[in-house]
Image (cartoon, rainbow, N blue to C red; front, side, top):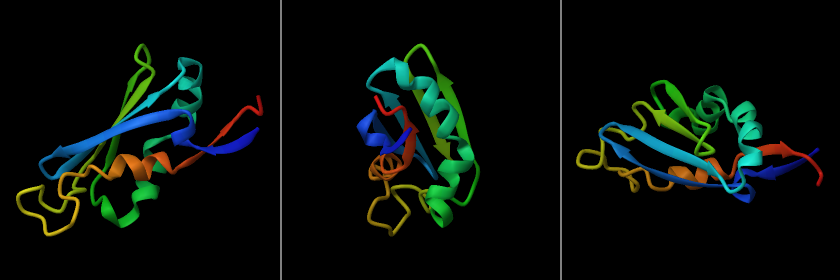
Length: 107
């Protein structure tokens, strides 16, 4: 097995839902879906964002699409219209998630 960043096997989209952020993680090849389902857990995502996410991280599985959807509660400091942070819409969160390393087969 070797370690790669998620961006090598997935793409992602993120955005705001008021106070909460939403990140969709989609595999390029469905053969990698089980791999990310096993390794990209809500706990691991929560740990990656540490203090940025004040609430729970909930994961929704979409196996037929080869996707996982994460809802990060209380991640946007009041949402786009209230926060003073640079990324009030949470658009950069998908890039951060894509930097997470996972183990994949050598081939």
